[in-house]
Each structure stands twice: as structure tokens, then as C-alpha cells.
View 1 (cartoon, rainbow, N blue to C red):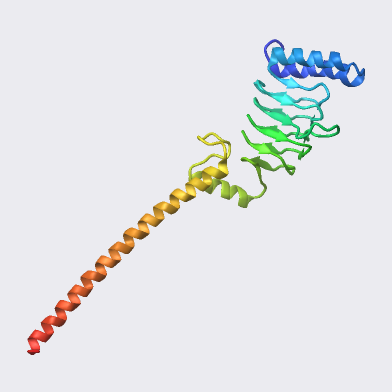
View 2 (tube, one colour):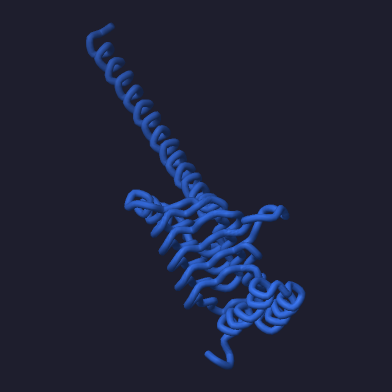
Length: 223
């Protein structure tokens, strides 16, 4: 870990660059140190960002943490995560992650939003709104799973052919769910057409049999 963990090294370099950038106000040195860290670790952390204790960046390549981002204690970030902003204006413009947040690989958390304690962000999700504590956010744009009803819907949708954590062909779970529902609808429509054809055939046979029966009755009565 001490010699070959880029996530750990990036956090160490950030502590140093932040000291110069924030504490001493030597912004150029702070930025140069953060660029040095980015070159060696593949992880870009602005020296103005605030990072708590025991923050773990796993793998780390491609992680970007913006200037006004705040990460609480015991958070975990996987590779490809972006904590980005939506404006060039001064002030708070990057997200805040409270204690114990887990952000999956490739997720984008954008804007001055708050991710509550213990929340989880699914891989490749794009989060642009606050996420409550303990909730899970998945999809593009991310939607929040809060209760057992939502979890049940996720399980049913998974049976229709998609993964909420973007391990299937497409990254958008809602899109995959809609595709699955459309396929199911088409299959049911085909079955209905087949059933209606069978009913029509049975009616035709019944009408033919009834006509033959009536003709036989008339012939027997001499009409």
C-alpha cells in the first residue's frame, strides 16, 4: 500500500498541496503539486477540495475532484469518478459527500448537491440532484431508490433484461427497462393475434357445421 497504491498517494499529495493552496495561500505551488500528483497517479484533485479522514480511492485512474468538492470521512471512490461543477462562477459549485458515501466506477456527481450519509451511487450514474442518507442512486439521469417498493421494481426490471449497475450493453437502466417492456408487449401482441385467429377459425368451423346441420334437417323434412 505504501509503495504501490495510487489512491493513497493521491490523498497524501493532496494534503500537501492543500496546505500550500489553502493554509499558506501559495496557490501556484499548490497547483503545481497537484499537477505533479495527477501526472504520477492519474488522479486529479484540486488543492482547494476538502477531503476527510480514511477516504479510499480504489484503482483511481481517471478520478476528478473539483475545487469546491467536499468529501466526508470513510468515503470510497472507484475509478473514473467525477465530482464536477456546472458553472465557472465563484462559490460552491461542486458536490458534497457526507460520511460513508460509496461512488461506483464511472459515476458523475455534478453541481453543488449533497449526497447523504451512507448513500451509494451506482456505476456510470449521472447525479445532478441531492441523494438522501442511506439511499441508492442509479441511472442516467440518476433516480433514487429509497424503499422496498423501489427495490422490488428494480428486481422486476432486472428480469426484463437490464442491470441497474450498468454491466449490460447500455449504460441507462431506464432505457433498458423500456426496451424490455416493449419486447414483452410485442410478444403479448403476437400471442393475442394468434389467439384471435384461432377463435375466428373455430367460429368458421362452427358456422359451417351449423349450416350443414340445418341443411340436413331441411332435407330430412322434405323442404
